[in-house]
Image 1 (cartoon, one colour):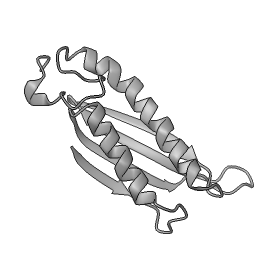
Image 2 (cartoon, one colour; image 1 turned 180 degrees about the horizontal axis):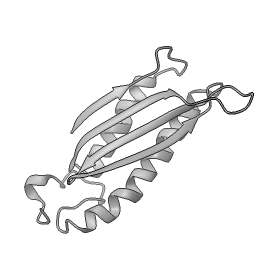
Image 3 (tube, helix red, strand yellow; image 1 turned 135 degrees about the vertical axis):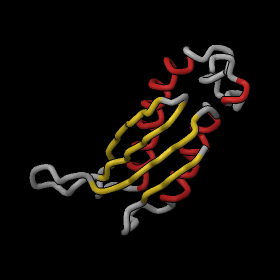
Length: 124
């Protein structure tokens, strides 16, 4: 899986890179058929008078389909806010990957293993 990561210029979350790498590795273990993963963590547009949140944007390419997902993490929150946003977007991705994997029966997507790869997927 090719991975592209865009992080904020000013890192207000400790261990941000490690959280993002752990996230992408976890996605790859869920379904190795993901050919491209792009994750961007950037300030979201400010709403009313409060500080802008960070938007966690995920774009996945799998079996020729593009999935685009988003979650938010409050700027003023701790590192846990980013962890929760990554967990939320991970579950969004799983929900979107599940029906795609059903169209590629026999490849093992969604079983939490690394057996799903385009070369051994009978649904291609």
